[in-house]
Image (spheres, rainbow, N blue to C red):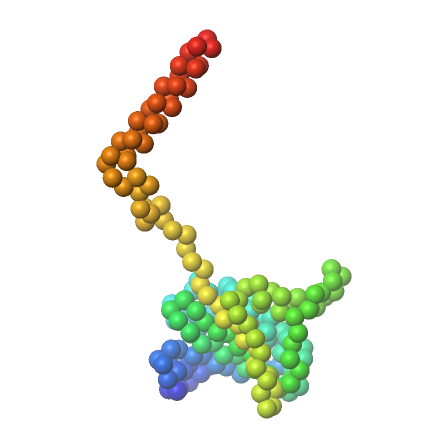
Length: 183
């Protein structure tokens, strides 16, 4: 990997040429918004702003878990571009306890983070490491709805179009005759 150090963290390029950004954060609640800003900045730099909101929410949940459960004073955030419309957000910490998807009750303050990540990501998972764990989520940019202009016309041949127009006119004449007969 090629490494370029910046004040916002390390910007890397993987062997396949895809961008990677990584940064360490103190295990402190105030680091969670910093992690969100780091992810947002990287995605804007990579011209992927459509993923920024989702990625910020995912890293916020993962970083919050690291702040609550990690054993040492820091955690790391890595963002890797997987394709032109896909990224992987990962948080690494020194806790070996793997998170579990839970069903939090209505009166519970915690326990919904992984459910949110599950709902927002195409895939997510955990990787045990010899000294801790990595929790990651793959995100894909939302697909824009197809424009009506891009659609192929319903009736492509002139003859089909003529038949359609004649049917519409016949229905209109039938309705007009029915209304006239009632009056």
